[in-house]
Length: 382
Image (cartoon, rainbow, N blue to C red; front, side, top):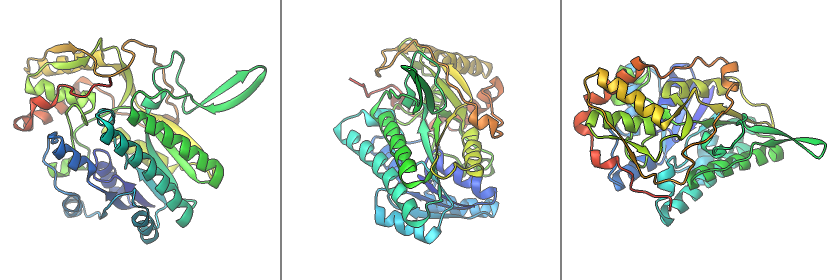
């Protein structure tokens, strides 16, 4: 099929472009370089040096023979996006083009306005482009498990059946986001649900947990094809951050008590989940939700796994509990359903000791690039 990837330069976007092109799809990517520019502006450069998007596409074609079309621009620029839709005529769109970091959204007014505007306007523009050019085009939007919060009941997959005063109704599962970023992800989901009911578009919302991983099968052909791997306090996910801290010899920074539990998955499983959603599209007028994760861990669980794996490699790994910069429950019930993608055929990668050691060894290759001062959190929720 013809797949347009919005945010195709990002941690997940570029990996998805290579993955899908290698499996026979015609792929085009668009990006405005927000992640690169913000990393430079905030002095939070990624661990691996990464060529620009045009250079990545040329390198990928040279080593694999598969082509990825590159377009630089903002999805918030509707004429630009509409022209791209008319030129490329996508069968499906993977929407990664949202500001992805909770800490960034909580830095201050400027960052909050950008997060709110970028995330909602980009989604609205995408909806209108689909309506204008091809209403049958399948939107696959990257959501987040963070929209649910930590309720004291099981988290269902997108919807909840409610019985009230003798009557029953199926609602979107109640949302309790924990940052402005997560709030925008809840809002864009509500917006997509509205337009599914109003314009009969088709949408799959992938409520993804935190992702870890440094490479994919495609990027192993040349290390320059690797993802933009952030390990800092703004853009680095917790396990990626712990891996770098272990190699750098700095304590693993556990926020608060460390009982915060979430669903995690390997970057290679993100690619597989997106592919499954594309191969089995939502029905016309359907807003479909999958909870996209493989295993649940507390922050303490992850810290202890990194410590054990690091010590097997001769690293001196320590764990330090620090004041939590976020407003969140540090001990809570957490039991989310995630059967949809498994039923479509997902074969998960689990966080084994062998995988942990492999990731640590990869980080060790780039040890000289680590800036330990970027790891300690500098953004507080209040």
